[in-house]
Length: 260
View 1 (cartoon, rainbow, N blue to C red):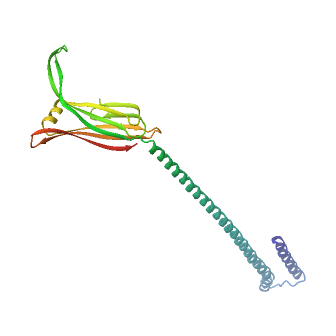
View 2: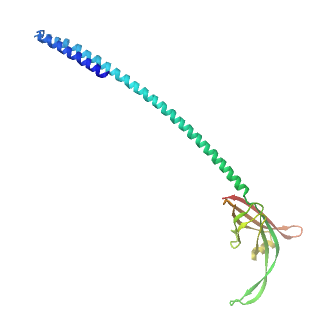
View 3: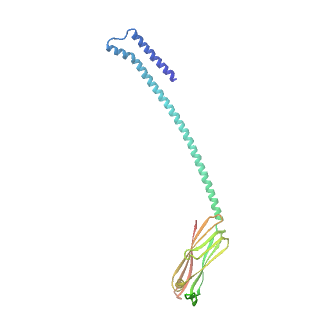
Protein backbone atom coordinates (compact mmCIF):
# COMPACT_ATOMS: atom_id res chain seq x y z
CA UNK A 1 0.00 0.00 0.00
CA UNK A 2 2.85 2.40 0.85
CA UNK A 3 4.72 1.68 -2.43
CA UNK A 4 1.58 2.30 -4.51
CA UNK A 5 0.96 5.64 -2.78
CA UNK A 6 4.58 6.68 -3.40
CA UNK A 7 4.31 5.75 -7.08
CA UNK A 8 1.11 7.77 -7.50
CA UNK A 9 2.70 10.75 -5.72
CA UNK A 10 5.78 10.66 -7.91
CA UNK A 11 3.64 10.20 -11.01
CA UNK A 12 1.62 13.30 -10.14
CA UNK A 13 4.83 15.21 -9.47
CA UNK A 14 6.41 14.17 -12.76
CA UNK A 15 3.19 14.93 -14.63
CA UNK A 16 3.04 18.38 -13.08
CA UNK A 17 6.70 19.04 -13.96
CA UNK A 18 6.02 17.93 -17.53
CA UNK A 19 3.03 20.28 -17.59
CA UNK A 20 5.23 23.14 -16.42
CA UNK A 21 7.86 22.22 -18.98
CA UNK A 22 5.38 22.42 -21.85
CA UNK A 23 4.08 25.70 -20.55
CA UNK A 24 7.58 27.09 -20.57
CA UNK A 25 8.25 25.50 -23.98
CA UNK A 26 5.13 27.13 -25.43
CA UNK A 27 6.49 30.53 -24.45
CA UNK A 28 4.49 31.39 -21.38
CA UNK A 29 7.66 32.11 -19.37
CA UNK A 30 7.52 35.86 -18.43
CA UNK A 31 10.49 38.18 -18.98
CA UNK A 32 9.95 40.51 -16.04
CA UNK A 33 11.56 39.36 -12.80
CA UNK A 34 8.47 40.06 -10.72
CA UNK A 35 6.29 38.17 -13.12
CA UNK A 36 8.90 35.37 -13.28
CA UNK A 37 8.81 35.08 -9.49
CA UNK A 38 5.04 34.97 -9.54
CA UNK A 39 5.22 32.31 -12.25
CA UNK A 40 7.68 30.16 -10.25
CA UNK A 41 5.58 30.54 -7.13
CA UNK A 42 2.41 29.69 -8.96
CA UNK A 43 4.06 26.77 -10.78
CA UNK A 44 5.59 25.06 -7.75
CA UNK A 45 3.20 26.12 -4.99
CA UNK A 46 0.64 23.42 -5.87
CA UNK A 47 3.44 20.83 -5.95
CA UNK A 48 4.81 21.99 -2.57
CA UNK A 49 1.29 22.00 -1.10
CA UNK A 50 0.72 18.50 -2.51
CA UNK A 51 3.90 17.14 -0.86
CA UNK A 52 3.06 18.97 2.38
CA UNK A 53 -0.36 17.33 2.45
CA UNK A 54 1.19 13.99 1.56
CA UNK A 55 3.76 14.44 4.38
CA UNK A 56 1.01 15.08 6.91
CA UNK A 57 -0.85 12.07 5.57
CA UNK A 58 2.25 9.87 5.85
CA UNK A 59 2.93 11.20 9.35
CA UNK A 60 -0.63 10.42 10.45
CA UNK A 61 -0.24 6.94 8.97
CA UNK A 62 3.00 6.48 10.89
CA UNK A 63 1.38 7.68 14.12
CA UNK A 64 -1.51 5.32 13.53
CA UNK A 65 0.90 2.43 12.97
CA UNK A 66 2.83 3.41 16.11
CA UNK A 67 -0.43 3.51 18.06
CA UNK A 68 -1.30 0.04 16.78
CA UNK A 69 2.16 -1.19 17.75
CA UNK A 70 1.79 0.32 21.22
CA UNK A 71 -1.62 -1.29 21.58
CA UNK A 72 -0.11 -4.63 20.59
CA UNK A 73 2.73 -4.13 23.08
CA UNK A 74 0.23 -3.23 25.80
CA UNK A 75 -1.75 -6.38 24.99
CA UNK A 76 1.42 -8.49 25.14
CA UNK A 77 2.44 -6.84 28.41
CA UNK A 78 -1.01 -7.53 29.84
CA UNK A 79 -0.73 -11.19 28.81
CA UNK A 80 2.78 -11.35 30.27
CA UNK A 81 1.57 -9.73 33.50
CA UNK A 82 -1.25 -12.24 33.81
CA UNK A 83 1.19 -15.09 33.16
CA UNK A 84 3.55 -13.72 35.84
CA UNK A 85 0.64 -13.37 38.26
CA UNK A 86 -0.27 -17.01 37.64
CA UNK A 87 3.36 -18.02 38.22
CA UNK A 88 3.44 -15.99 41.45
CA UNK A 89 0.21 -17.66 42.61
CA UNK A 90 1.64 -21.09 41.76
CA UNK A 91 4.88 -20.27 43.60
CA UNK A 92 2.93 -18.97 46.61
CA UNK A 93 0.83 -22.14 46.64
CA UNK A 94 4.00 -24.23 46.37
CA UNK A 95 5.65 -22.33 49.24
CA UNK A 96 2.53 -22.75 51.38
CA UNK A 97 2.47 -26.46 50.61
CA UNK A 98 6.18 -26.77 51.46
CA UNK A 99 5.58 -24.83 54.69
CA UNK A 100 2.76 -27.23 55.61
CA UNK A 101 5.00 -30.21 54.85
CA UNK A 102 7.81 -28.73 56.95
CA UNK A 103 5.35 -28.07 59.78
CA UNK A 104 4.09 -31.67 59.59
CA UNK A 105 7.68 -32.94 59.57
CA UNK A 106 8.63 -30.74 62.53
CA UNK A 107 5.55 -31.91 64.45
CA UNK A 108 6.39 -35.54 63.72
CA UNK A 109 10.02 -34.98 64.73
CA UNK A 110 8.99 -33.19 67.90
CA UNK A 111 6.58 -36.00 68.74
CA UNK A 112 9.32 -38.54 68.09
CA UNK A 113 11.75 -36.68 70.36
CA UNK A 114 9.05 -36.33 73.02
CA UNK A 115 8.37 -40.05 73.01
CA UNK A 116 12.11 -40.81 73.25
CA UNK A 117 12.88 -38.12 75.84
CA UNK A 118 14.79 -39.17 78.97
CA UNK A 119 13.42 -37.81 82.22
CA UNK A 120 16.14 -37.45 84.84
CA UNK A 121 15.06 -37.01 88.43
CA UNK A 122 17.53 -35.57 90.95
CA UNK A 123 17.74 -35.71 94.71
CA UNK A 124 20.38 -34.30 97.05
CA UNK A 125 20.91 -35.99 100.41
CA UNK A 126 22.93 -35.48 103.56
CA UNK A 127 24.45 -38.87 104.41
CA UNK A 128 26.21 -38.13 107.71
CA UNK A 129 28.37 -35.69 109.66
CA UNK A 130 31.42 -37.27 111.27
CA UNK A 131 35.16 -37.53 111.48
CA UNK A 132 37.80 -39.36 109.55
CA UNK A 133 41.30 -40.21 110.60
CA UNK A 134 44.14 -38.60 108.72
CA UNK A 135 47.90 -38.83 109.06
CA UNK A 136 50.73 -36.39 109.70
CA UNK A 137 53.95 -37.35 107.90
CA UNK A 138 57.50 -36.09 108.02
CA UNK A 139 59.71 -35.09 105.11
CA UNK A 140 60.38 -38.76 104.39
CA UNK A 141 56.65 -39.53 104.18
CA UNK A 142 56.74 -41.45 107.48
CA UNK A 143 53.66 -41.29 109.69
CA UNK A 144 54.51 -39.44 112.86
CA UNK A 145 51.00 -38.75 114.17
CA UNK A 146 47.29 -39.01 113.41
CA UNK A 147 44.39 -36.59 113.76
CA UNK A 148 40.67 -36.55 113.20
CA UNK A 149 39.20 -34.27 110.51
CA UNK A 150 35.53 -33.29 110.44
CA UNK A 151 33.70 -34.25 107.25
CA UNK A 152 30.20 -33.90 105.84
CA UNK A 153 29.21 -36.76 103.55
CA UNK A 154 26.72 -35.89 100.79
CA UNK A 155 25.13 -37.75 97.90
CA UNK A 156 23.59 -36.67 94.62
CA UNK A 157 21.19 -39.32 93.25
CA UNK A 158 20.15 -39.34 89.58
CA UNK A 159 17.29 -41.59 88.41
CA UNK A 160 16.02 -41.98 84.85
CA UNK A 161 12.22 -41.98 84.83
CA UNK A 162 11.99 -41.71 81.04
CA UNK A 163 13.54 -43.34 77.99
CA UNK A 164 17.20 -44.29 77.61
CA UNK A 165 19.75 -41.47 77.90
CA UNK A 166 22.90 -41.72 75.81
CA UNK A 167 26.35 -40.30 76.65
CA UNK A 168 25.38 -39.15 80.14
CA UNK A 169 28.03 -36.87 81.65
CA UNK A 170 27.83 -35.38 85.14
CA UNK A 171 30.53 -33.01 86.33
CA UNK A 172 30.88 -30.43 89.05
CA UNK A 173 32.10 -26.96 88.22
CA UNK A 174 32.79 -26.38 91.91
CA UNK A 175 34.84 -29.54 92.45
CA UNK A 176 36.26 -30.59 89.04
CA UNK A 177 37.29 -34.02 90.35
CA UNK A 178 33.59 -34.91 90.77
CA UNK A 179 32.48 -36.44 87.48
CA UNK A 180 30.63 -39.48 86.23
CA UNK A 181 30.14 -40.81 82.68
CA UNK A 182 27.65 -43.42 81.53
CA UNK A 183 27.21 -44.34 77.82
CA UNK A 184 23.70 -45.80 78.29
CA UNK A 185 21.53 -44.72 81.21
CA UNK A 186 18.44 -46.91 81.05
CA UNK A 187 14.91 -46.49 82.34
CA UNK A 188 14.56 -46.77 86.17
CA UNK A 189 18.36 -46.89 86.53
CA UNK A 190 20.05 -44.96 89.37
CA UNK A 191 23.39 -43.23 89.51
CA UNK A 192 24.93 -42.08 92.82
CA UNK A 193 27.60 -39.43 93.19
CA UNK A 194 29.02 -39.36 96.71
CA UNK A 195 31.35 -36.62 97.88
CA UNK A 196 32.61 -34.99 101.07
CA UNK A 197 32.98 -31.51 102.45
CA UNK A 198 35.98 -31.41 104.77
CA UNK A 199 38.57 -29.16 106.39
CA UNK A 200 37.68 -25.64 107.42
CA UNK A 201 34.54 -25.57 105.27
CA UNK A 202 33.07 -28.53 107.18
CA UNK A 203 33.98 -26.90 110.50
CA UNK A 204 32.23 -23.65 109.56
CA UNK A 205 29.08 -25.47 108.43
CA UNK A 206 28.82 -27.50 111.64
CA UNK A 207 29.76 -24.84 114.16
CA UNK A 208 28.15 -21.65 112.87
CA UNK A 209 25.50 -20.45 110.45
CA UNK A 210 26.90 -20.72 106.96
CA UNK A 211 26.12 -22.09 103.52
CA UNK A 212 27.88 -23.74 100.60
CA UNK A 213 26.64 -24.25 97.02
CA UNK A 214 28.02 -26.99 94.77
CA UNK A 215 27.32 -26.64 91.07
CA UNK A 216 26.82 -29.57 88.68
CA UNK A 217 26.30 -29.76 84.94
CA UNK A 218 24.56 -32.78 83.39
CA UNK A 219 24.51 -33.40 79.63
CA UNK A 220 22.92 -36.30 77.74
CA UNK A 221 21.15 -37.26 74.49
CA UNK A 222 18.09 -39.20 73.49
CA UNK A 223 18.29 -42.11 71.06
CA UNK A 224 17.89 -39.73 68.08
CA UNK A 225 20.81 -37.51 69.12
CA UNK A 226 18.87 -34.57 70.55
CA UNK A 227 20.98 -33.04 73.33
CA UNK A 228 19.84 -31.89 76.77
CA UNK A 229 21.63 -30.04 79.54
CA UNK A 230 20.70 -29.66 83.21
CA UNK A 231 22.36 -27.18 85.53
CA UNK A 232 22.04 -28.25 89.17
CA UNK A 233 22.73 -26.36 92.38
CA UNK A 234 23.22 -28.41 95.55
CA UNK A 235 23.15 -26.11 98.56
CA UNK A 236 24.13 -27.07 102.11
CA UNK A 237 22.95 -24.61 104.75
CA UNK A 238 23.61 -24.63 108.51
CA UNK A 239 20.79 -23.27 110.66
CA UNK A 240 21.00 -22.42 114.37
CA UNK A 241 18.14 -23.67 116.54
CA UNK A 242 17.51 -20.84 118.99
CA UNK A 243 15.96 -23.14 121.61
CA UNK A 244 18.66 -25.79 121.74
CA UNK A 245 21.52 -23.63 120.41
CA UNK A 246 22.44 -26.51 118.09
CA UNK A 247 23.42 -26.33 114.42
CA UNK A 248 21.35 -28.30 111.93
CA UNK A 249 22.25 -28.90 108.30
CA UNK A 250 19.67 -28.55 105.53
CA UNK A 251 20.11 -29.51 101.89
CA UNK A 252 18.38 -27.82 98.99
CA UNK A 253 18.35 -28.73 95.27
CA UNK A 254 17.82 -26.42 92.31
CA UNK A 255 17.46 -27.53 88.65
CA UNK A 256 17.53 -25.62 85.38
CA UNK A 257 16.61 -27.70 82.31
CA UNK A 258 18.05 -26.64 78.96
CA UNK A 259 17.76 -28.09 75.47
CA UNK A 260 20.89 -27.70 73.34
